[in-house]
Length: 446
Image (tube, rainbow, N blue to C red; front, side, top):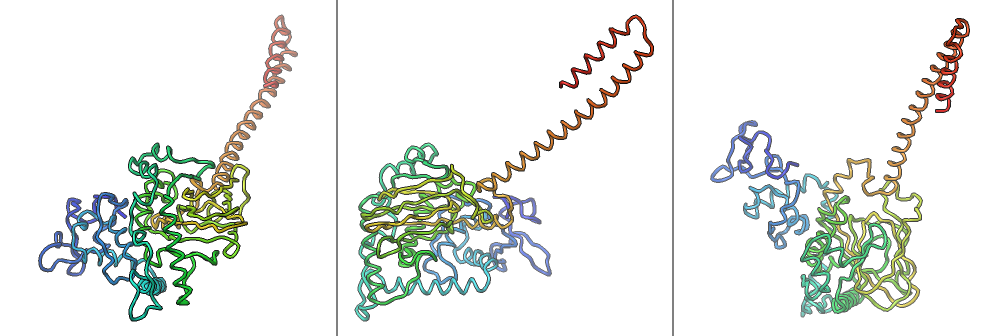
């Protein structure tokens, strides 16, 4: 990738508005971006920006039939070079599609296409109005406002104020950090929690009545629903981009917090007739938002055991890494996805949690080429400090050995001097001998 405005190799004068079109067996002609014969931009002639253009408002791609999620195109558009941002939507789509196809193997594209069809089948049946032709296969959404972002109706005022100010101090004013890297704060209004609970129950009722087989949120939970799968993808994308990313940029910069671009949003259900607890694990995310939305329950505490990379995920926990968190409806806990954790048994009642896994494709790609994760993995940090300690110890040992060697040489010289004085004799013999003996004792003491 090239930096914003950086010169494209081979471009005359390094002007970012000049396109290099490959023609006639590889010769280059600048400026073929307008008029007849213009060559479409490709990833070879136009490099993505290193950082997203946060001021740019991307196009909407939801009306297009694409192999990838429309939200991926909207997110990727912010990384387009400046001279492509003002192009027609079709031009941008073709350019971004070429990049995506280059990095997605055929098997992954097939999987994504099947998932799109699965999701579309759910959304087309679980819709706003009950179908007249097939009433048994459709259901009416209860709360339409949940399917788009309404911050004033969703979030508590203190949270909105902090997001509006968008400073580290503003975020810290509403947060507590009971353990390093774990942040808790008031977030959701009770009304939002009630609407979400009702909508999830309504969707699950439709699933039960139609016997529609749905995919659960992850491999560890047998209960719960993926909110993206029945229409809340756009709302959750807004939640990640406009609310979680500004916070993560401040508190999780080392794990891709500044570049969150995809998400996985779902609701988990715990109780006697649901999942009771959750085993020790790490999330498939860079940053995880976990908010309890109800109901009445006992138990269900989250237990945290430190941040680890893949290599050290099963290493021992240090005492300072142990922390337990008790859920409170409407209150959020935000942590790094690699922060090892689990959930204790919900002993009574029913606990429902909204979870948003926020991911960074940039961080995931860069992680493939790294071996040292000491900036965020506690065990890597420990190993790095141990290597530094051993290195310092080795240097000190070398210094000591060198000093001992020098002292040995001094003692040998003193012994020769003493022998010589004893043989020569003379008036000052005894004073000189005493002086040398004192020096010898001094060096031995040192």
